[in-house]
Image (spheres, rainbow, N blue to C red):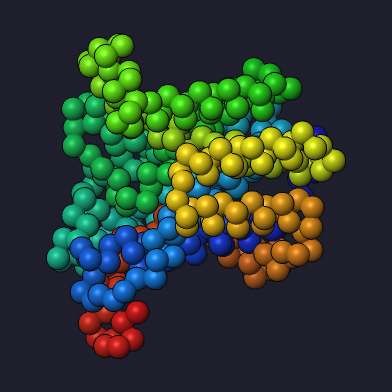
Length: 324
């Protein structure tokens, strides 16, 4: 059994991730369509959404650790939902009430629909629900999309772990690498040109819809990085794990090639290696202040977007030159 002592530096990494997401949503995502003011956005904020990918890496690390403390797949799933549901119930309800009362400009019209509140608390993709029931539902807050990817990750990781603990990393690697390859074949134009003539347009469109709904396969390599990091954390002398971690990081960066994404990947790679080999260099992330902030990052993520954007929209005009 692995030591259950809390790894506080991970909480500090959560703080970095949530700040990135906040900056993205408040300074770029809704800038033109929802805000009453405008200014030249710093280019860096455009890529703040990559904080979600950092959350996925942390999740891969944490879930690998959590699985070692569970007796069965059902025990694991129960513990995850106990962890997720209370904050979701409170934050989604607050979002629904806040938007129903104060969103008189209907910036987020879907947030004041009760059916969307119910759907959001299932953690299931509204796209999947709409496909099954021919309905027209959505998330109460668009940021919730990542929770569905997390849920699918929990299910796949849990099943693979309890099938074979020793082959967990190998089997998950096969699933994620296969998944990301098929995802890009199904979603990209080149993939369509290659696959559609081979399997027929109807089957191709069904496969394409599957990968649009099950977004885990687009982001699976980030979770894999977290799992490798976990193994490396408890086996620092393994050159093979370090090599594999590096290869997956490079492969993921190539898939999403962009100058700023490359900088993010390099920064993340260096920080995570410090976390493993030189934790004293990033010890500040593990101090009491950052650790406490990291503990509430999940709740902040659930409640920050629509309510925050609405508040900015309502009050920015009164702040004049300080509307930043």
